[in-house]
Structure formats: structure tokens, C-alpha cells
Image (tube, rainbow, N blue to C red; front, side):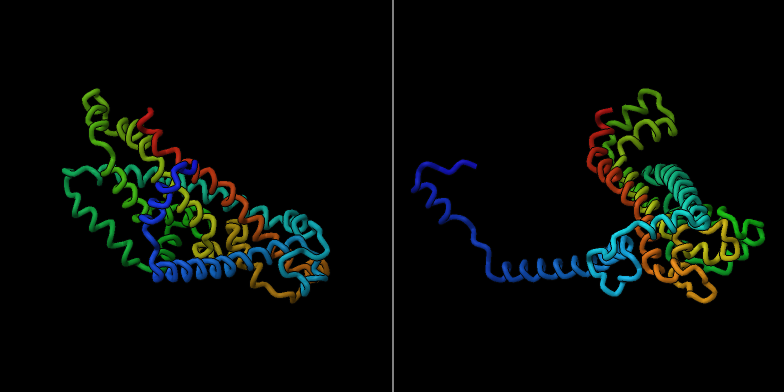
Length: 300
């Protein structure tokens, strides 16, 4: 910004500038200090984990933020583990299936619920919200899965996570705020409800679709609770999060592999780092859609 040539005018502007009260300055200072401390609390364990992942187990006691005895042995070791590879593939299948099915079904459900004169709308909303607030519990779900004969498979991990009332409410609220002129014009042109949803509503709702999809991906990828209940006795149907959970709680009793004993903490860190990579890859893509999606619908 260019400075004003007239010094009197510059002085007048500086004089009339609103000064920040001392109380606001103190408040902002405290907030920034709190955020800085919180950032250190969050970042420090992550940096320590990354340092351990690339370190030699012999030097673990000296590792703080930088690796000691830099090597990739822990990564190569965990990548050779067949159980790790199976768990990783299971997590990919579970996450993709839940994300696609949940996003599709919640959009199909949110659209009619966003229509003002939709029949029995209030009654249906109550039916949807009650299970969100009051769950039936683990035992009925387990008995149902066992009765259906899908225990110790990936099916219950996928099916029981498809319905998400919170995501449906997010989509419903976003659909209600879309410009009605575009929707009415599409109806005048003869668009049916499904055509209207997939050709107009969803392209205009990329931000909320991306947001709910990211929530679903993050939740499905890191979920190990379902595997603890439904897949505990079948290692071939366990996701990566549950594999890491078991790894962190395992002891050295019965282990004869000296490398694994010495580098136990390093192998655990390497597994966690690898498990973070898919989410880190997806995150920028989702954020790009959140920014660009605001104009995609109107452009089309």
C-alpha cells in the first residue's frame, strides 16, 4: 500500500485511527499464548513419534525430536508383516465402502427431508434423532450380527456404520439453503426428483458432501471399537486401527525375534506413521473441494 504524500493527511488518519483497548490486547495475548502451548502439546508427541520411527531402537532413550541412528528398518519390518498388510487392505475396503454407501444413502434421505411440505416430515425426524441420542447398546447389536451369521466378517463393520444421523442433518440443512430458483427452473424443465438430486442438488452441495465424506473417512479409518466386538477372533477381518491397538498392548513374552524386541517402540511408531498417510493424502483433496465446491454448482 502506497503512503500518502500529504503528511498532514497522514497525521490526521493516524490520529483518528481506533486504538485497541488494553483489555483486548491482554485478552489476545492470553489467547495466543494458550494456542501456542496447545500447539506444543499436540506437535511434540507427533515429532517424537516420527523421530522414533526413523531411529534405531538401541538409541531410543536419547530420542526426543530428532532420530538417532537414522534408518528405515522399522518401516521395512512392518511392511513385511502379513497381518499388517491384511489389516491395511481391510481398512481400505471398510473405509471406501462406508464412505460411498453412507454419503449416498444420507443424501437420498436428506433430500426429501429438506422439502418443506414432505409428508410426515416431523414424525420421521423424531424417528431419526431418537437413535442418535439413545443407542440400543452393544449387546443387541452383537446378538443381531450373530443371528445373521456375519460375525467375524467385514460386513457388520460396514453395515452398522452406514447410517449417520448427524451427516444427514448437515446435508438436510445445506439442501434447505440452496437457491430455490435453480431448483424450480429444473423442475419446470421436466427434471424428476432423482435427476434433480444427482444433477442439480449434489453438484451444488460439494462443500457439505466433502465435509461429511471426510468425517466418515476419518471415523471409519480410525475405528477399532467395532472390530473389538464383532471381529475379535478373526485376524483376517480386523482393520488397521485394531491391529495397531493390539500391537501397542502386546508384551514381549514368547517373542524370540531380537530385532522386534529391541525396536518394539520404533516398529509401533512406524505402523502409526503409515496409518496416517491415507488420511493425510485425502485431507488436501477434501479441503480443495470445500473451497472450489462453492461455485461448481452455479457454474454448471
